[in-house]
Length: 318
Ligand code: TXA
Ligand code: MG
Image (cartoon, rainbow, N blue to C red):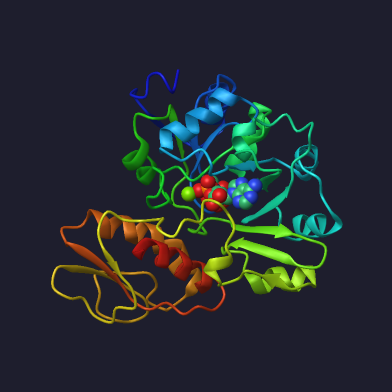
């Protein structure tokens, strides 16, 4: 079993019908499988199985007070797990499937393992756009708890290789479907009657939420108010020191650039924010593996998805 025997071979399979069937069998047996989503790769297990969920915490080295996101295949499944207010339904209808996680009151009859919510009265639900996670939920017939597939506190994986570098020997199977398209973890929001609380900035921006909800979005860009328990100040952290707003590389620094500038790797030559978001974690992985002693990152504008990019960079540097 996963907890008792943490060292076994991790297989990587190209995502497809056969790999999916095998992944679903593993999930039903209480094992861990890494699965791509449009944001980052997730480390998935049956959210209704206490031992499987415990194995996620153990594989990641994650503190058990930090609850997990539960992935569903459709809105019906989500409504069996949590209570949807009219505001919650409006946001789900507007942004699902997609990179938005909704924090909602968990239903007493949800069947979810109490470890998933870490004892909170709420559950974080996500209906991803990427077909791999949705298909695995359907094929296994289980809601899937899935945090990012990396050791706790380190950089999130946007490629199968990143998962292996961080967790090899701690899970059975990685479904490989190449680099993820968004590159940053989902936006986390808690809808209320008269406002939406933004708990983690992400690809669905505060402006997009505000426009859809027609009520104020609070907590945006104000880190002291971020209330997702996992939003610890130091997170997404490479093993080396990180210097922000760097215009040139100092001695022994690996410079991650943005826009046309001399640098070691560029997030987007055209200064395109979505491209920069998609490339961010991969660039941090490359910089971390380089011979340089430390990492420097060029300034990134804060508009749109830039809020989420800067949020992750601040935590990487903390
Ligand atoms: O894009 C994503 O969201 C990826 C993919 C795999 O779906 N998942 C992901 O999971 O980023 P993770 O575990 O790395 O981040 C989940 C965050 C944590 O900060 C956690 O504290 C927060 O969600 N969270 C989970 N349940 C919560 C709840 N009931 N209330 C507030 N925050 C919650
Ligand atoms: Mg994470």
